[in-house]
Image (cartoon, rainbow, N blue to C red; front, side):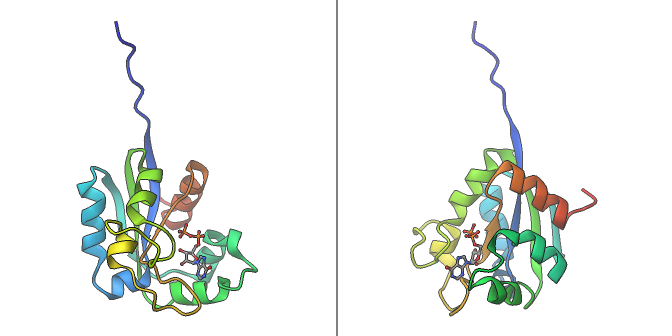
Length: 146
Ligand code: IDP
C-alpha cells in the first residue's frame, strides 16, 4: 500500500509593479500564473504607500537602489495578487525569471517582457515572495483583511 501523499498548498504574494500595469501587461502576467495551474485567491489594484513599501522592502533599506525603488513603486498603481498552489512560492519565482530582465531567461515573464529602462532601479515587472515566511508577512501587509 502506498502512503498517502501530503499536498502542501502554499500562498505567495505577487505584485505586478507599476511598469507592468502601465504597459498593460497585468492580464498577460495573470494568464501565465493561471496557465501554470495556480489559483488566484485575491487580486486588487492598489496604490502603494510609503509605509507599506518601507516594510515590504525593509531588507533593502540603505542600499543604493532603495530610494529609486520606493519612488518607482509609488509611480503608479500596482496589481497585488495572492496566488495559491503546490510549490507556488518557488514556482512563481521561476515563472518571473532573474531580477535583471537582460539576464532573465526567455520564457520567463522578465525574460520575455522585461526591459532595462530603469537606470537606477530594475523595472522588472513583478515581485514574488521568496520564502514561506516572507509570503505570509507580505500577504498580511498588502491584504490585511485576508
Ligand atoms: P527580486 O525582486 O528578484 O526578488 P530583490 O533582490 O528582492 O529581487 O530586489 C527587489 C527589487 O529591487 C528588484 O526586483 C528590483 O526591482 C530592485 N533591485 C534589486 N537589485 C537591484 C540592483 O542591483 N539595481 C537596481 N535595482 C535593483
